[in-house]
Image (tube, rainbow, N blue to C red):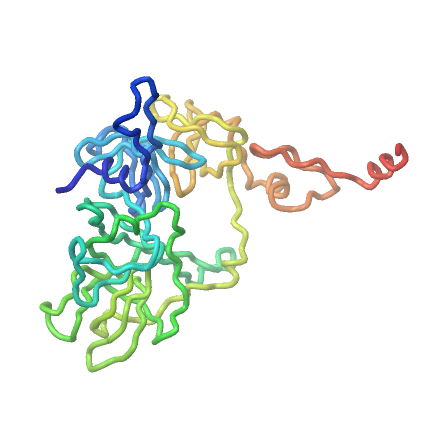
Length: 372
């Protein structure tokens, strides 16, 4: 029988419990908060459960959250990050990562023929449990590729799609982790690396839908091609879920550019930042979260309430701040202070929560030596 997500997560975390036979005068042991990960590519935090009220923030995959309470299919959480914000999220958008390579079982303790392999760091959604087994569903994973830009001012365009093989099944409870790093693909040692061009199903053998492997493969999923036979391509997925089988040759194409050296070496510049820690307010003037000094923000406009801003991923919060606490980094002097040496030897002012150290000029060193 399935249990609530809160109980499920509590069991996952291995939280200590006070012994049942403790003395009456001994204080009860307060268990640590239950924590999970956001498993969806991005999820909205609402002010009320059921997707009602206002969207407080958009939280991206991999953000750690504390579970506060649950109501139906919704769970109230609080983010564990530099931006702390609380709200209601769909329970199906929460999960964990796989701690080591493991095959996806068809049921508690059951394995089918050639089951999908979940690689270390694979993100899964938590659906339920049975004893020492958890029912999960694999989550989409990001795929980034690049193409030539329209002009010299923007020579490279960056595209982020969500790909992967989506399927549900069961894993041992011990395989669910919050500390494991997310899966990162490496160059395959077998076959030719390609890309899936359309959402489709993988077949165990060339033929009709009766050979379909449970689950579906999304467009932009990396595909390692082994061989081509007629109108079919034999290979396997090359992502956080590895599944071998057959695809129509029309569903497979060449891999786009995923490793431009100029983009990897480029330094990302900020346009605006928060000068010092301050609250960001919603449309009614109520505080939503406290932004730390130095937090990167996007300025959306100004009105009588102040500067309307939005924080950048992985936690996007939109609201209003006092314009005096919003620093523009796009003008030359500010850009030089943030990213380069100042002409004329001038020293930049304090920035963000950590002041810059003062320089030690040669004259100062000589004076200290003379004093000694």
